[in-house]
Image (cartoon, rainbow, N blue to C red; front, side, top):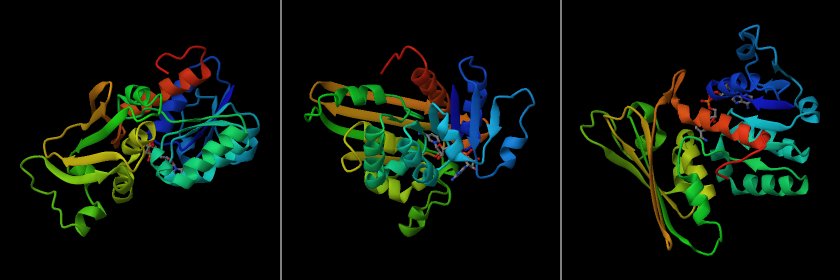
Length: 271
Ligand SMILES: NC(=O)c1ccc[n+]([C@@H]2O[C@H](COP(=O)([O-])OP(=O)(O)OC[C@H]3O[C@@H](n4cnc5c(N)ncnc54)[C@H](O)[C@@H]3O)[C@@H](O)[C@H]2O)c1
């Protein structure tokens, strides 16, 4: 089978190399706005090839995997779903646009395919989704607390606009406390986890997000708290950065590889 990857950066490249080792995979087509990124590959990675023609790729493709940026979701994913090709999306923040999310769900339904969102850089999405199974108000509250180093949040406009100084901190400081809907607007480059939690649980308008700058943070840490009538979930994820890109957590790439294996494989544990 053939798979298309949009975006050949840290995550896309790691996925492509993992797919290359799988017997079931014949071709891995790469759509990338900087084609030179695909040219420095080892010669033995023969299944991986750059493609200029997305329409041709979609003709004979089992799955599209987006690992690029939010604008690439808008540009490429609806078209894949229109052609009946299931799509796995990493830049989940794009779906804070309700119109895009609704459009993609309708297209998937009309064309008998699916949109997949991996758990990415956070654990606990399985339990959160499970509690929401009956959709009858079981979940009472969802809080996501993300702890980042000053370096990981450097240069955010939100801090300037709100006179928040994150330099020379001696202890952790809460720099944002509000709904996910606003968090994704204020911190567009740090929104994927908040978006995934929102889509899995109470939505963008009822998911509370706290962002904490921790001067001692070595890892991107997320604490997910879910309060429900049937019990509570509290889940910590302490991520090491991706070796080639400190802004991305390594778990995000690994969770994506695992998601693709489940989608194309014959068994699905933890659905
Ligand atoms: N869901 C999660 O938990 C999670 C975690 C980490 C990263 N992410 C997201 O995954 C995406 C990829 O992350 P990364 O660390 O690999 O990024 P990266 O910057 O290393 O790579 C992105 C690649 O996509 C290419 N690209 C960007 N826009 C494009 C477009 N419109 N068309 C074609 N190619 C395009 C870039 O040239 C680059 O090569 C980002 O949007 C990131 O925010 C999600």
